[in-house]
Structure formats: structure tokens, C-alpha cells
Length: 305
Image 1: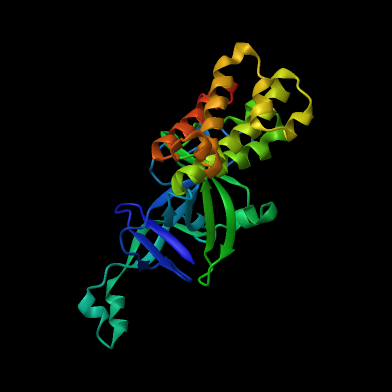
Image 2: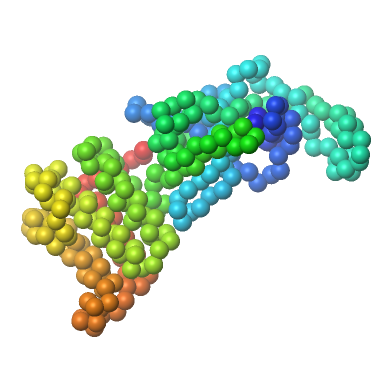
């Protein structure tokens, strides 16, 4: 599947062998840059003006509740002179509907376009690019997304599923560089579950996932910053809270608050204490409390990415 963007009008053209058919308006197209360990903001496009140096992501769907985007990924085409192609330019509907469709040749024009082809550069990476981080946007404003699935469509396009590296406002973004590398996977999984729950699950489930994330993060923080043994990884929130020094009173208080909210989600505990069931406001409080704890740990990204 070929893809091209008109330099002057920003019209999008697609086609199997040549990008010569006009695409309808409504498809969001973003410049994409693979993120490496040495990634800097100046690696991104300086503006929205296209060039032949960056990949293109064509969004097909977006689900904010699961923080997933799905679309086609293209790389600059290298098999033809840059940047020109021949396209069929908006033939009138009455002309294309007549039996002699070959008359559409009257509307074939040479235009200056930026041509792209399916992004095989991604597929050539280990695991077909799964796990690769892409920065979508420009140096002025961008967001980070992780490739979680890659596949080829019938038309030959590289179809990718991206998951947001940020929590879309549910939680502050964590700087993994401030966390022991051995803990990255555990912390990321726990926070991902909490953020996903915040967007689509019941208040009781949100509180439960926030408590679980706090247990995971608090245990790793105690090992990393306080020299506690790895055996704390098997302990529950109550025992972990006892190991927090009085100097970190705010962390102890937040842990106690989330523990009480979690208990209210259990029917027997709610009856025993005559407390109410957690509602949406309580779920928001649990999410904000988890974010507060992450800030107290010193794990928050101070600037992007």
C-alpha cells in the first residue's frame, strides 16, 4: 500500500502500487519518530512541515479508555525520485459513475507530493518492532506511544497498535531512569493496570488497582531508597507501611488512606464498620493519592520525555 501527501494542499492519496487515489478527509496523520536511548527533543521534526526524514502514522481508531491507537505506519519511499508522483485529482462524481471509467484519465495530473511506503524498517527490528517507543508529533508538542502489536493488512500496509506511554491525566508520568532497572517491569505493569482501571472500571476496582500499585511501588521504594531486604516484596500494604520512617509521614498517611478505601470495597468489612461503598469521588481520591505517593518517592518525570 502506497501513501502520499500533497505538499500544497495536504490532501492524502493512497493506492496499492501507486498513491494516485484521493483519500476522504478525516484521517489524522502524524509524524512519527522512533525513540532510542539517546533520544532528544531535537530528534523530532521542528515543525509540522513534512520532510523525507520521518515516518508517518495514519490513525484509524483511538480508544481513550484503553489508551490505544491503531493505524498504518509508513516510511519515506526510496524507490522513486523525491518528491513527485502522478495522481488522479478529484474526478467529478458524475464522471466516475459512468460505465466508461477510463475517461478519468482526463483528470490525471502531476503534483508535488511526499511519497511513503509501508514501514518495513519497524518490522525489521527485534520482535517485529513490538516494544518500540514512538514519539508522535513535533519538537513543539509530542506524546510517547509503545508498539504493542504489528501486522500486515491485506493491502500490504503495516498495521500497528500503540499504547500510550503516559496515563492521559490519570497519573503523573514516571521517569523510569529514577527507578532501579530491575523494578521497571513490575512498576510499569502495576501502574498500567491502575491507569486502565481509572478510565473504564468501577470505583471498587479502581481503588483495588491503586492499592495494588502502591504495594508494588512502595516495596520497591523501600528496597531502593531505604535498603530494605527483597523479602518485603511478599508483604502486604499494612506491613510495608510500618517499615516507612516517621520522616516520611505523608507516605504513611496516604498508604493508610488507600488501605481504608480498599477495605470499604469488601462487603463484610463495610457491614462491620457501617461504612458506605466507594463511589466515583473515592476512586478519584485513590488515583490522586497514588500519584501523590509517586511524587513523594521522587519518581516523577520533571520534563519530557
